[in-house]
Length: 490
Image 1 (cartoon, rainbow, N blue to C red):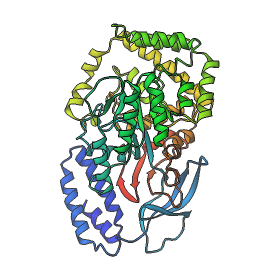
Image 2: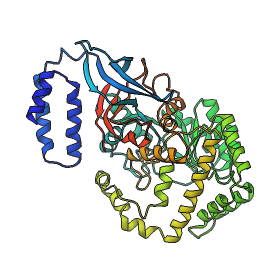
Image 3: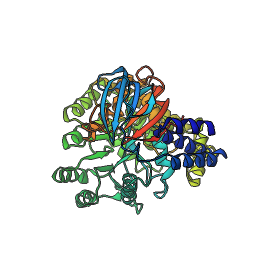
Image 4: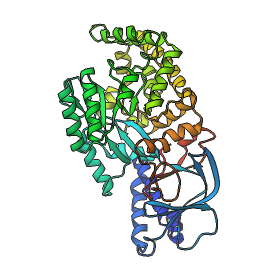
């Protein structure tokens, strides 16, 4: 290890120390004794290198293969030059000027990933718990996230700390608390039961700095006043489709994205008898039988009608409404009692979550009959997702982490694999987590692709993700805002 440090010192390749430092972080994460020694060597290295000579230098990813998510092709033998937070140029690889510092040579460079549906400070995680979670997102190549229901004050605090360099983490976009009919004092939820509640929620959340409004489940009588107030305030509203509102009504009202196929029960409007199936589903809420809801969903799934589902797709395409299917969350839910457990990641989570997600507890909470209902729903929702994709509905990649056993980071990579299995090409799936996500957030002029002038949020891979989408897991380096922020978690 001393030899490695001396080699780095003699080369003067300072950014490689960032890579080295993150290897130390990985060792610490796994609890290995050598981490402290590595950090001491690293500290020594930084102390003996004169700072003034390299701090202003450009950095370069040399002779790399650029993943063009816009055109769906690999552009070989490129030099990606970074100055400050931005990409200065992307050109043919050549002899490098001595004024630049090489960050990495070879591999495949793609844009940083976006996870368009996460829950970071609420639902499952204590809002005070952040450093491991935010680090893990970066280590999995996720440089931006859209948080869909959390304590807004915690999210603003984290965003500030990340901006000030006090904490590593992705770019955070958030809606604050989810709007729900359920009475709750939890900071990640806000009760909305009337038109007045809805208008007040929109006004106050915008004033508090929310980037958008997230609906969990609200009454029909509150939904349309909310949509009108959101338009008046110039803020997007997104989320679940309320059970009393059709897809056609929601898209016409301006809902910008529909989250989940299952929790928005798209099976209702994709069924042969939408009105009757909707009435049965709503009636299931009054039933004391725990599986009544899932049986109602299964009935709608079994009643699938291509003509009606094509009308759903037409409405979404016409009004520019996106779908975030969160297939990975449903796959996990449908197999939660038999999943292969990610014990290494579980150890990083709060003890309470480890207990709640124990194999014994999950098996005890889910009967075989209940799991059979979820399996049927999972099969039906995959059919709906594939159909809507073929009909041209635009989709975004989101994990719904931290739902049960839904880990921030690896779950997004699984979502990409499921999108391909559903019918997307690897290029389409990757675009759903990069350029399309940036477009949805109105950030595509500055993010989402490897192009000159854009923010240097980048991931270096060992293997080609357009050949196999699972190659997004072969992460060598993560760069956010021009700085090395991670080295991969797998």
